[in-house]
Image 1 (cartoon, helix red, strand yellow):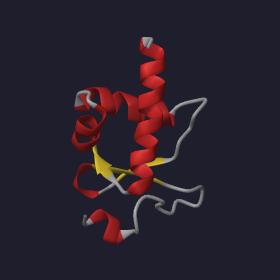
Image 2 (image 1 turned 120 degrees about the vertical axis):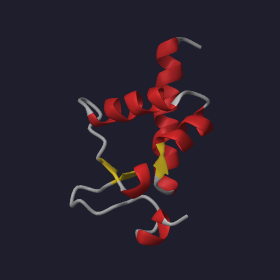
Image 3 (image 1 turned 45 degrees about the vertical axis):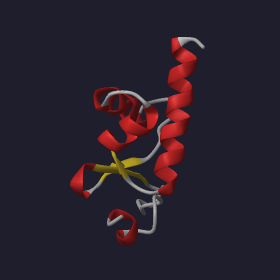
Length: 83
């Protein structure tokens, strides 16, 4: 698998994990088998053109997904943040 296809697969994996609930870069890194620095780069890439995924940094260093109105999609609001 090429480096580009590995990264694309990881970006999809990150989105899938964030749909479940908010997660930290460290947690995402462990689940994806890369460093937290790589995850932070991936999170930035997801927010840029052409993807423009609406991510939000939450309390305790967690990242989550938002809808267009600014409402959090990851998890179940506050309950999702406390897991």
